[in-house]
Length: 174
Image 1 (tube, rainbow, N blue to C red):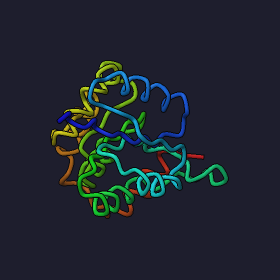
Image 2: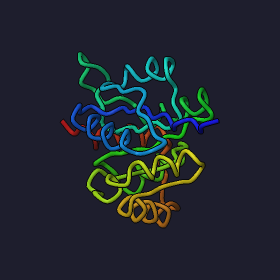
Image 3: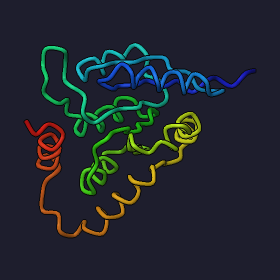
């Protein structure tokens, strides 16, 4: 009996990124992109129709075509993991400060890749397979930032909601 492919869903606000990830992932034996979305508002519907095994998610997606506000990814991740306990979430984003990456990891994601880590993006299929098998993955830059966040953890006096609000401001300063 053949081993089923790891099913991947992608949420990113750039079609070219979705197309690139889809090309790279569908070229990897054992991986198949089964659902994509451009806006945060589409995420729940996409997962309800096809939950997949791994979700690649960008932090800075818009809520919808009509609503340019950033989608609240940080608060959405724990809800998704509660609703889909077998889903593995990997953040792929240009954004990431030490505190933000730490909070994203505490929300339950299985990986964090910075979009400027070209080697990780070339190895995206292998990373998805690894995460689907229960491993955690950090790109090199994300790991460095995460470690900085862990070192500075004691000085945090902000609630998770306050950090989420600050992260939204950082992602969309205008």
